[in-house]
Length: 121
Image (cartoon, rainbow, N blue to C red):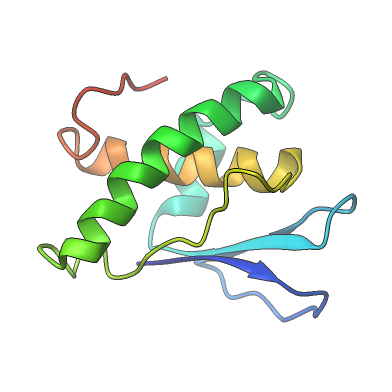
């Protein structure tokens, strides 16, 4: 599993299990490499525009806190192998927040108890 938030303007060739989203309005992008994520997105994700950016940011902040706490503890390195460098004061734009939100929804789908206490949308 791999999800990385990057500050970059480089373009790279994408593999079939790699999803790379770059916001045209910001300098940030998200790269998600996870088996089954692309298929899950096609089948389960709400369309872009369904959620407001503030809604996505609110949930991403909750998810990030849980994720990064687990990553920092090192208790489950296979499921949470890294910290996601999401800064709450930065506007990453709609597309990055949308994809990150859906990545967390995918993780919750695969591991229903992972984000205990946060409802799945």
